[in-house]
Image 1 (cartoon, rainbow, N blue to C red):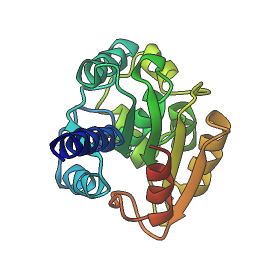
Image 2 (cartoon, helix red, strand yellow):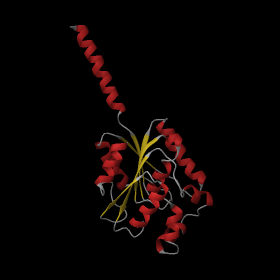
Image 3 (cartoon, rainbow, N blue to C red):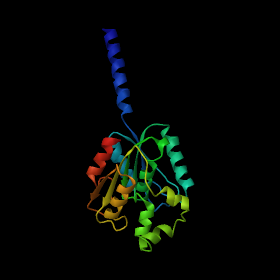
Image 4 (tube, one colour):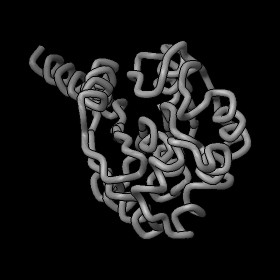
Length: 216
């Protein structure tokens, strides 16, 4: 009987450890028009939702992304925390753009990324907003080097499952334009819309969230 109980405890311990490995480390990025961004109530709410879904969520600060080197610095920071584990990434606005782009960094082993109202192709965004208030709010505060524009634009080569969610009342990152850019640079990704503006929470599009969680 004692041996039977011991085998049972060992088996149970193995199953519990196996269950723990099913959780994914998910990084949550805020947006601030590519200026330095820190965690906020928006990312804290997202972290709570992700933890409730059974995953480990980490909110991280991001540097000003004004060069390719700054983007690489962010990728190295995430890699140093993940220690080679497969990860997920959720980002809002500029943080969403970074989530999609980081999905293309092979060493990060990104399983899935969720881009909430972040331009998938920054060059497209600048071209469409040339000279307007949203354009000035971005380029007037960050001096983008050509390497930054290149890093944030063009096709994304990734095996990760990338989801985009865009607000139908968003004048900053217009849904129709953003979806067109997203599909151009991430042909295998999936896009959703929600009836709201920029700055919405991770729950704004339940289908987008469910799709992301199903692949992370």
